[in-house]
Length: 503
Ligand code: NAP
Image (cartoon, rainbow, N blue to C red; front, side, top):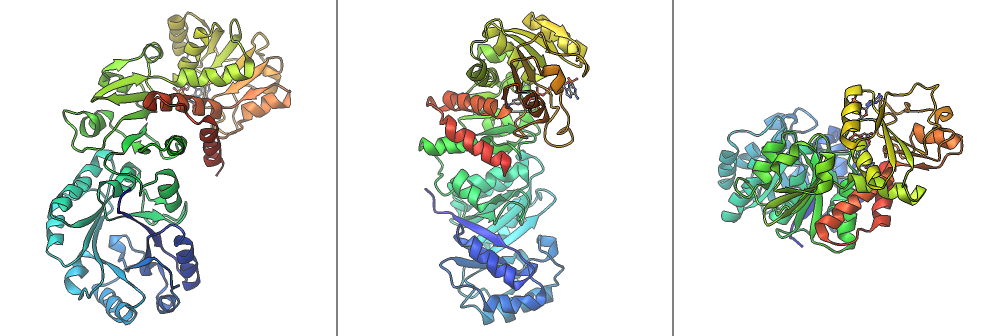
C-alpha cells in the first residue's frame, strides 16, 4: 500500500457533460482534474457554479495549447481566468495546477499548488534544470510530463523521483506514450504524489493514459510498493496485449505483491542494459521476470544465462525468469499449443497434423506435436522456410495447397499463419470448408477475433474447432507457474482474456 493518489481528468466542451463526467470520475478518483480549457468560454462560469459537492479533491487546470491544452490562451487570458474566476470561487476549487510560468506570477494563496511542465516531442535536455527551478517556486508539487518515444526515454524523468525524495519534495513524473506507460503504473509505488487516469477508454487526455478502472482493478497501483515484484510483456507492439489482464488477475487471486506491465521495447539491447542487467541498469524496479513477444523472441537468447531444452529446440524464448540477477529462458508456446489440443482431441500419438505456416508459432507447434508422437507436415508459402523446418524436425514439407486441394489425409489442420487475424486479414482463411470437411479437428492459433473465418468454415461442415485463446491462456498459465511456482487460475485468466478481447 502506498500514499499516492489517482487523479481522473475531466475534459468536456459543455457544462452539462462536464458535470456528468465529474460524477462518473468520482467513482474511482481521489482527485478530479477539472480541465477548464476544454470548456467553451461561456460555459466555464456555469460549470463552476454547478460543481457537485463530493468528497474528492478538485484540481483546477486551464492549459494553453502549447502545454497540451485544448485552446490558444495568452498569458493575459490565463491570468484573468485564475484571478477572476478561480479566486471568486475558491471555496469550491481546492487544488490548482499552473504551468511553470504562472507559478511565478499568480499569488498562490493557501491551497495545494502543482507547477507543471509538459513536453510532447521528447525529453528536454534541461529536465534536471527544470526541477531545480521548481524548487524555488512556492509550488507544493512538481508535475513533469515528457514524451517517451522509446522506453529508455522514460529513465530521466523517473530519476527525478530520487531527487525529490532527497529534497523532501513532492513530484509527479510522467513519461507519456505507450513506451512510458510503466511510469503511470509504478509511480505511486515509488513515491510519486499522484498518477493521472482516463475516465474511460477513448477519453484519454494524454497519450499512454490508462483508464482509472484498469489502474485500480488490473494494476492495483495503490497497493504496490518498492518491494512489489515486477513482471511484464516485452515486445513491440504490446498495446493490444491481453496478457497484463490475465497475469494481473492471477497475481490478485493469489494475493501476491506482484504486477505485470506492458513494456513497449524497440531496442532490446538497450532495455536489458538500462532496466534489467545488475551490472549496468540505471533504475531499480525489482524485475523478477517477463514475457517476450514479437520481435524479440530470438534476440533475447544472447542475453540469457541459461535456456531450457524446449526453448533451445524451438529456437525462441517467450518467458524469462530472473533469479539472483541471472536470466533464465523458457518457451511455453509448445505447451500452450498442446494442452488445448489434447483436451479436445485426446492422445495425439500417430495423429496426422497439417501445420499451415512456417513461422515461430508453427515451430513451437511442430516441436510439441513431435513430443506427443504425432506426425506433423508443414505447409509454408516460403519453400525455403518449410524445407529448413522439415529438416530440423525430420518431418514432411509440402507447398501451400490451392482451395481445390483437400486435407483429407489429415486428422487435424492447424492455422499458424496470420490469415484471419483482426484487421486487413480478417476475411481471409488458410483453407475453406470444402478442403477440411473430412478432417477431425481444426485449430486456429489466432485468438483475435475469438472466432476466425477458418473456424467458421470448419463449423459450417460440422468439424470440431479449437480457437487460439485456449493456447494464449495455457502458455500464460505455464509462465505464471514458472515465475511463482503456483497453479495458475485458468478459468479466471480465460474469462478475463475473453472479456478484454470482446470489449
Ligand atoms: P510469424 O513468425 O510471422 O509466422 C507467420 C507465418 O505465416 C510465416 O510462415 C508466414 O510466411 C506465413 N504467412 C504470412 N502471411 C501468409 C499468407 N498470406 N499466406 C500464407 N502464409 C502466410 O508469426 P507467428 O508468431 O508464427 O504467428 C502466427 C500466427 O499465430 C499469428 O496469427 C499469431 O497471432 C498466432 N499466434 C497465436 C498464439 C497464441 O497464443 N494463441 C501464439 C503465437 C502466435 P512468410 O515467412 O513467407 O512470411
